[in-house]
Image (tube, rainbow, N blue to C red; front, side, top):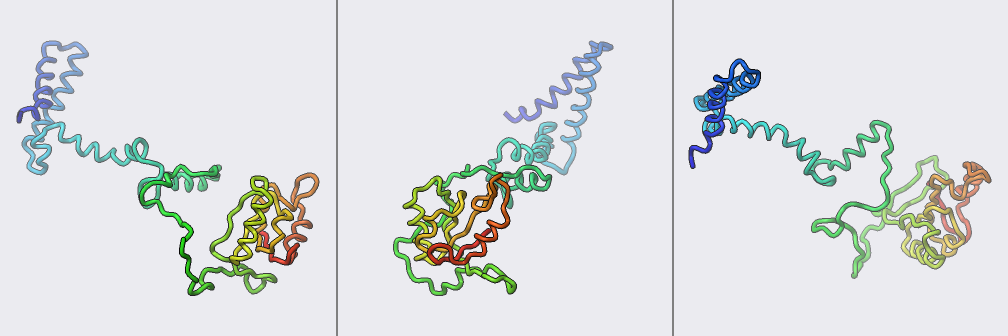
Length: 244
């Protein structure tokens, strides 16, 4: 039906004609003003030579530009996922905004990302590992010229897992793996237990907000205990210990 596209213009003209007999009632003035305004817009759209959409669809054709104008806002606030959009997702932008305003920017453990989604990237153990051609390329030196105990850290290490959440045998196994692999074992919250020391794997001492292993009887930070622990290069089984 080719004439359907002219219905808004026809309705505007009809509204103006209907309002005339009702003058000077307030509703008639409102209807007349609206009818004349939209009628003029529609007639102008019919005669202008610049935009075919407005010429073929007078009045309603202008909605195209209106929706294009509000499209970014609609996507951002109503339809866009927290992890979509480039170059930065809404989740990343929210983190930057919070830190810029000195607001709390902590994030809980876990993830809202679908780790089973096609295209999700992760690192898995190889079933057929091969020797690394240049092992030195997988290590980073920590400590400059003034450092008394510089450390060559591997880029792959055992992440923090609290001893309170693992058994003694699990801690022993992880630390022995760190010793065999030549990488570091993060103690996690709870400081350094005797089981962390048995096999001599390198340790990253996690102090955390509770000053684990270096606090006084009142729970405050104890610089002397910290210095004693951090300065000892061979605690227990003779491994390097480093405080972060």
